[in-house]
Image 1 (cartoon, rainbow, N blue to C red):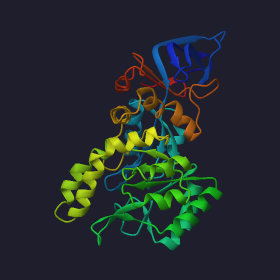
Image 2 (cartoon, rainbow, N blue to C red):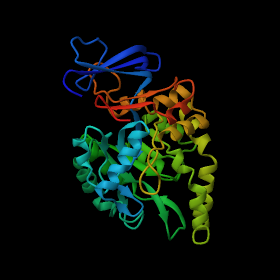
Image 3 (cartoon, rainbow, N blue to C red):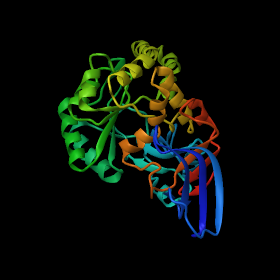
Image 4 (cartoon, rainbow, N blue to C red):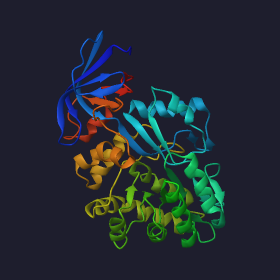
Length: 363
């Protein structure tokens, strides 16, 4: 758009769940609620507008076997964009995606650096694989490289035990999380199992990814500490397939994964009912396709979260949690326009009418 070009979005603008306005204007890539004067060119888009959706657990630049080439990472980001995802918290990637920051047509990324895992306790070529005495140093390194987040692998299968087990001793995570906080970064952790959670939360962690092991006795601890969860239910749906694949070699682990899958909706609903913050994340990248954000919102609703709250978990609430603006005056114009009211039916998110990034209509 030229300096004098203006985008006019009219219909219903959902600035917040109850803050609904008739129109907004985009001038020089920024949102305004005052009609500009003297524009050379005005393009009008009509419908129901939301802030660009948030995928708070996504991996741009990561494939099934590790880092991918830039052209593949670009396709991943474009797929997310076409689904309406315009803000990504990249929850661990071995790829350098800083080049995305120079592209005005791609989603904005908040990086958590590279995963930090215990030696031989995670998928190959994904993470730094280290021992506990190195954890604080690696957390400091990734805190400096990231955008205010660090990602730990909190548990994984222990082949000697044949089941999920915590990756780190309590004293190691306490020191590492304290160092991240000293450097101004928040810490999150991949956790499937029950027995990794208490130490991480009491050590001061800020968020738990997946959180399938969140049991009723742990919920009050999460709620009291304000620890958020990102359930990634579209990923948890793959647990039965994973369990089938590991049945012969690790039957105990397979049975455990099936139990976690069976109670996944109860886990999320109980967490929400207790006041634990819940946000949308798909775990795209690696083995899971990009562009699944609408499906994850629908899964939260299936779990029992009210539709408007599930919508907030990928829009207003998620952006506030990540410290990024929505449709406020002067904010970058990152928004998605739909045919009908997504508060009434979140399935509307599956079909964006228009996608606007930095004031440009790109989809």
